[in-house]
Length: 475
Image (cartoon, rainbow, N blue to C red; front, side, top):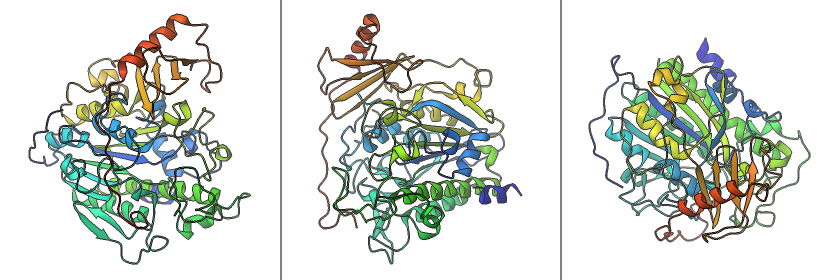
């Protein structure tokens, strides 16, 4: 049976209206948006990976559309998620710091609010990162009628914490001590399946931002053994062998390469379980599934060069070169999206809100930066209009900026927001690895890109991080 093959191989406030019961006359899809954490462009088999097994995601690509030029909202977690939720690019997005708990505000409209207003049940299971408990940014104040997971993104660095959040209440994970117990990824995967079962007769939006394969490098033994001993390893000691800026209390890992691969394969298995459930409940053809990552691969013990995790792109997480912001993007909707297709359309997290709004019959705020890519997904004939093209795409992080317009990509050479920045210019059609700066030879293009960089940035409101809990963080 098909199900067995899946299992084996693999700023204005929203107006609330009642959730609409699914019916044959309502052809709007259920929407599942799955997002990995720090998964690189080249970490999946369908994007060229040869060392890590990802059969379920590879199959998702063969049954849907695989994009080769899709981008995250930023090169780090929180700001990327802010772009995803609000449809505002990095120069307009409300959260630009990556400290972990900076909240979005009551007036910020989220994807969840847009779909809730269109009658969808809205659930978030996983890592939030846009507002700590007690702030305005918590999911249940931002359009999600059900939330289970991590609020603060530093909390989401740990896989055996003592608690998670269920809406506004702590959910204690009995037996977890910070280093052992029930792996949180498995709890999140089970909750996602339960959410789908409970809402199978409604239109639902499930946002499923997994925390893997972000540090720390811990995964249950039944996954680790598949890769244990396969490659030479440099033990990761946690406190003394850690990347700058990362918590000192990460668990040590004797086999960081094996753990990284095992985390990705375990996440792949969870995607397979979810796809199998959609078939079991006869929801497969009524559900559009997205899979992506919040930014590029993390440098450090997970060893992106060893796995070719950037797929030959320059840079990693924390940089605005392609390896930091270009991500996998797979979209499947049987009978609606061409199976096995590979698409070079350029789009980013800014475009997710208007796309989901169009698919779900909702209305996005007028001031967002994104445009719907529904005509690209469904075909222009089915969508009834041509795909609108954006003039440019913009990213910023820690006073660094980047812009892409068609084939051209500009990256600021020095941090800052001055009106005439020094930039590097790359022709991505000829140089996807961003090795040859052609700014001097293309004065007109360089001037245009400087103008985009200057006009795109608006000074953010204060980025206030709430006080962290005492002791070992979030355990």
